[in-house]
Amino acid sequence: MNEETLATIDGWLAEGHQVAVSQVVRTYSSAPRPIGSIFAVSSHGRMAGSVSGGCVEGAIFLEAEDLFAGNVGGPRLLHYGITDEIAGNVGLACGGELWVSLDHHRARPDLRRGAIVTAVTGPSAGARLVLDVDASSVESELRGALHDAALAAANDAVTREESSAHDLETSQLFVEAIFPPHRLVIVGAVDTAEAVCRLAGQLGWRSVVIDPRGRFATTERLPSAGTVIARWPEDGFATIELEQSDSVIVLTHDPKIDDPALVAALAAGASYVGALGSRRTQAKRAERLLEQGVPAGDVERVYGPVGLDIGAHTPAETAVSIVAEVIAHRAGRSGRRLVVTTGRIHPTTE
Image 1 (cartoon, helix red, strand yellow):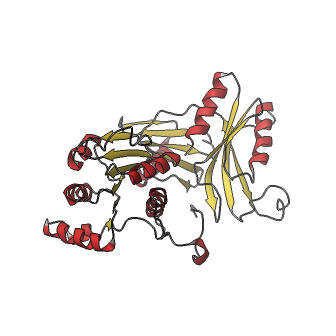
Image 2 (spheres, rainbow, N blue to C red):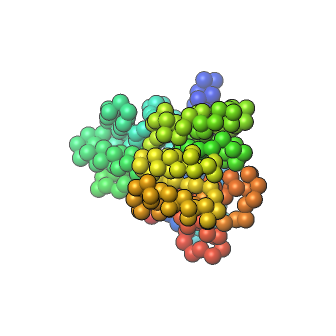
Image 3 (spheres, helix red, strand yellow):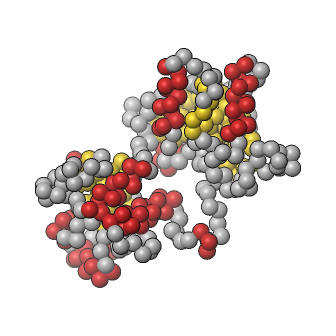
């Protein structure tokens, strides 16, 4: 989510500039950016990233200038929202509220999967705990009950792959979950696969295409795919070590390839499993899976026909339909039109 901003920060630091970093640590109602989003300001007047889509960045820029000048100290917790006091100033036009931490840049640990817990208020403000799951290590500047609460929150964030805010008696903690970009595993090196991979790349997701047909599974046919594997699905899944957090999409229309892929993906517990084809194709596919001993509950987990009902026809349109359904599934949303829904548009921690 913040990769480009963090890369820009590294460039500023290499040039010898100071950097102030603000990060969304809590939201309420229709805040336009999720918690964890970063907005950075350099001492030479540059900006990168976003915490509100433009509503409050100007105000944060001025706060950062005061930080560079030494007029205020860090870390600080800033609150923005629609109130009588700031309605004509910064506020959020969408009617939401957000809380942002602001401090001088601090080096981030190199984590693949883990969590960074920072005390944003209280006597230990600025101190943090770093949980590195891959290295099975914990480094903590927090002590006592605050350390214990931070470690519990870090483990929970890793399990849920979700950042969060926690209020304690003496401090507020912000827990930033760190995990690899979502991985989309596609079985079937068809034209729709390339279109799906292109969209996945724009979302910052990783993509893998698996197909035993060597003439199809080539980087020339699939230039947008992160990885192309010319193997049978089960072997391909073993090669990439398919994880429960992965989404699997089967596109070949060939039962010899589709069925083993679905059986293996369901057995591995992949979070999302979708299969291209008509309703009639899906009904026959379900019968075959049941005959192979796949539990009925698992068969019902298959999103087939895959995708949202948007009238897609071309490979590009079909890719939009499929990727949109994966996004909705990961967010726990229905994928219905916003005009007919009544809930909040943006996720919130409150």
